[in-house]
Length: 281
Image (cartoon, rainbow, N blue to C red; front, top):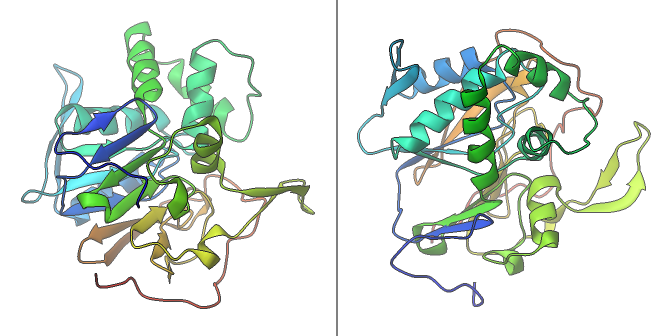
């Protein structure tokens, strides 16, 4: 972390966010992918009180104690209700109760809302159809929100890093197109696998940083600690579960999917070699 300058104030350039004085406790929530009912159920299991104010068309959330939620990205696509997931997360962030990083699906929706020529597939077609039921003001709010999402967040004096696809230590607190791409998609070999998908490099296998890195992006059956990193995307939209990691206690909470909303072309990762628990420092 020698390249990272910590300050007493939050720094935000719309690319990465440094919050040294945010020590937790946090509930870090994996890829939601439009699974709104499961998100509500997970928050309730974590003792958040969620109420929808019909008059103001906003969610009013009462967290347990001084907890805040951290979302690892991919709020949208493939699932049954991406707009309400967005509304709930936006309302929590506006109330100072949450932070969120951008996922690759969130970034693609943002580019679509900007009018860019993007391929409307891999679940984006469902989000677009769902968003069509909402007014222009909501579309604008979502566009502004997605445009401000950082690609990674550093918290608790550099002890905790949130990035959608993870990030190796030497790039923590760095900002470039390359770093942003790694946060959104993870490193790849440039080759395609048998499913015509990019072959991903296992960056966590050689991670030796002091900061805990919490990420998602690639579904796993169960979250597993590896070299001070943990993937908490447990594939809710594919019929798995929606998981949350409590920090700094490292407790895991999950709710099973209420349905099987999409088919995963790439099989879930079953296990990793050299599994390790997080460092106690």
